[in-house]
Length: 297
Image (cartoon, rainbow, N blue to C red; front, side, top):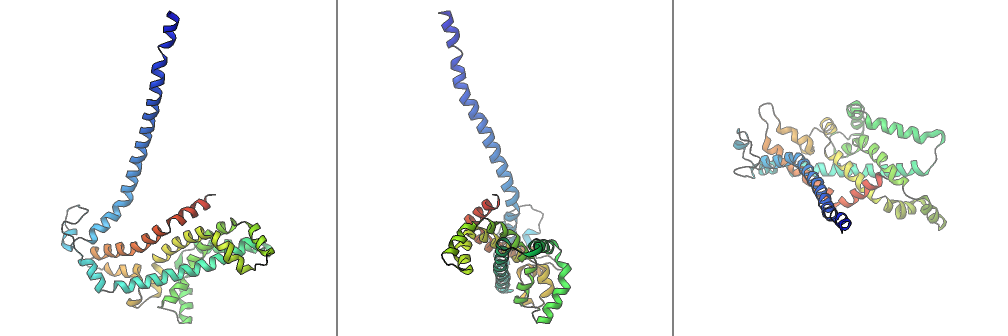
């Protein structure tokens, strides 16, 4: 009887305590994760909340000493002033230039990436070309400002949207080539060889095989290139002179003067110009995630 009592007593605490200790460890880990996630969200969302609050704050209120993020008396006066000042025209200019430069860079970059992956070049010219593209990508844009100015002047494209679209290829095209290389490499060569046996030409293989399989990569590259072209400032400052041709980054600089900074209009432009990018990124989010997953393989 004494032996039975000694072996039966310690079993009960172990079987009950083990699950509770696991739950406590899991809860602590989950709590820490959500605390870190909340801190990161607060860190990144705070400037956006501040920008939105100033955009709806009257001019006399945001220069006060209070640190309130939200306006006490919301107003649309800054947005009305932007509308009267020609904001829709500048938004249209930015949209045309950014989308045009992105589509051109994406088309040329895709064809260049396909050629670099599928074709063999003598004397390792493909490696030399990629190195040259990388050097151009890492080069400060101001280095090529004067040659590009003379080129645009000779072509009669100064102060025009077409000239700006062509100039933006200096940094958007190298980015597209390098980003699309890995996506084109992931397309199985056997699929194209099978299509060739069925009589499909190069253009047909590109359209029906390579393009659909590179869809997530093209979408991700499109978004990142569009953001680059959307926010470009230096070339727009150098090659645009007519106020009605200004893009949004250049238009923003008009609200910072020697005597005053128009914070309300600045934050209004920031809020309105961010919306198209956020909407487009949200629409193609699944393609972006798939593109990132393919890049990490």
